[in-house]
Image (cartoon, rainbow over the protein chains, first blue to last red):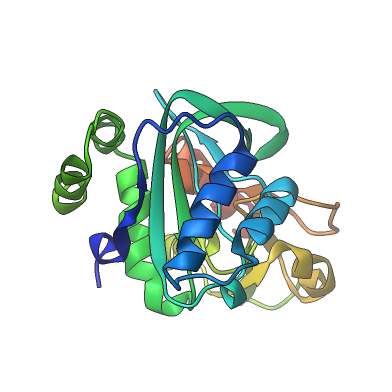
Length: 153
Length: 95
């Protein structure tokens, strides 16, 4: 299974006018629940986990975040993507007292660690590619997103 | 620690996501440098209880408390920023 196989186009939001992390968690959590991929507690648990162990990452040119929570709230593995033109404030994974303005959020709906190693490695490789992030951020429709995920970076 | 096999705890908030990638990276790093080690993936909340038998905690996430053994923050393995410096820190502690 590849990273792109976990991508569900119903769980992709481009240039979403969101004002807060909570809004992002609600949006994604609700849709993931409706699609049967996560249970109804998912958005709440995402928010709780993010408050204790933040997931914001400051990369060279971009701020991104990879919110996730315990596997018990997931029914089927998935990756949701949300991009924001203005950005939303997250705290940094390595220092919760520091904020980072995040333009791309990858919400990870993960289950067993060993089955998903290659997917996580692929995701980290993508995250570390400025070109991938640039292409994703400039995607104007879901077809663009699909081609970005189908491309090698 | 007198044992020649080192024990390394690799932690993240959930013990299933970022630590999964870091475990593989650390295992390879140690093997490449001839350091024998048992690498265990944990949630950072478990680190306090497991530190007695370990030589090092490598964490991608913030440390909620202090520990009696050395710690290395390895968020750079996820972001790709300063990853080589993290490699070096880990080797220096375990060698």
